[in-house]
Length: 459
Ligand code: AMP
Ligand code: ZN
Image 1 (cartoon, protein in one colour):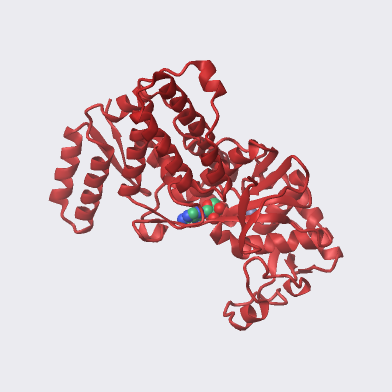
Image 2 (cartoon, rainbow, N blue to C red; image 1 turned 180 degrees about the vertical axis):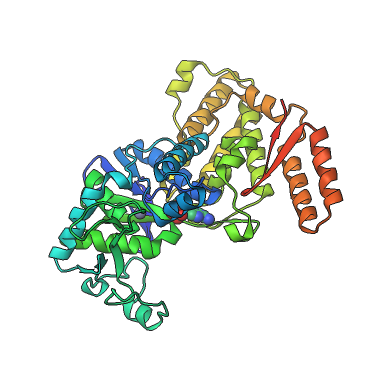
């Protein structure tokens, strides 16, 4: 079966054909490194890691996931904390890779950093000016949206309607409200690089166009990211790259994951409900989080709650329970083939709910079987499927040892913390203190911080 992927530009699922036989290039917009990644940020990392694994079965894949290490949010974090920018970005690049690694995300082939590609960005901006798609004004360079007739094609927006409905204050140096920044001036205390337009720094969108060009060429096969990036980020990348490359398409397939919400609400700093992967993995096995993120189809919204986690944990209990006690010799495991129905599901626009259903069918068959040879073969297939999906990497005995050590289960700890936070919000400090004591008696210490309450088991 051919791989099918949903392309945002065409608005439908289409058969995947790489531009060069046997080879695929894929670019995923990566993190802006000024803080830890939250669970929403982990969704594209995990989903497109799975796609990379599926593609690697057939093709030589070159997968780039960038690091945005020059950005106004990073500058703001540096001002706020008094820490140098390089210290902040180095810390959060490492944290991102460690945290995603804990979720079974394999490192991409290339991890380009924006600050190491300034020359490429400047060259691309110069090309856009030379070709009449960009203009300089007061130390800024702007992309002239009116010069590109296909602007709005990806996000299905009509530029005239956008302008008519626009209420944004137009910066004086812009010719039109939707012209976007390719380069902007920096003050002496901000990071900046010499350029034909004075000392300055790049806009966010040009970073990805330039890094994709440098590492993957003018036209890439797959461009991916979260659905919030369709507009303006990807629309702008699309315009810049096509115009800089004389109309060559930027990407043949545009893939976007749906959004993750928390308890049916949008995750946001102001609501105080931002869940950081860094904190979650202290108490929840990375594999549980990965399975929870893959439990919904990637284009659907995914609501994250205690129940999402508990469900993923139960699913892994069932899978590990099925293979527990079955010795699969190395050579059988090495020769095991992932069942075709499961591969077909993943190759059908990464249909993870279907793939997981296939995995449970195997577990059910294994539980029913009383033939040792068949059991070994089914267990080997389950492990092979797990390898493909980045799951079932633990030893079943270790899995169950970790889950049933007599401690207060993580869900109960989380529930007590939620209850304590609610008590604190209602200024019921007596109850809040009683809950802290109850947790302490159960060997759990908690810490309130800016990002919420974290906890750990003592000793
Ligand atoms: P950012 O660092 O904000 O650019 O986000 C990094 C990646 O996470 C992008 O691909 C975003 O689209 C994605 N993303 C951010 N928030 C969410 C969310 N709540 N659900 C799913 N994806 C998200
Ligand atoms: Zn990007």
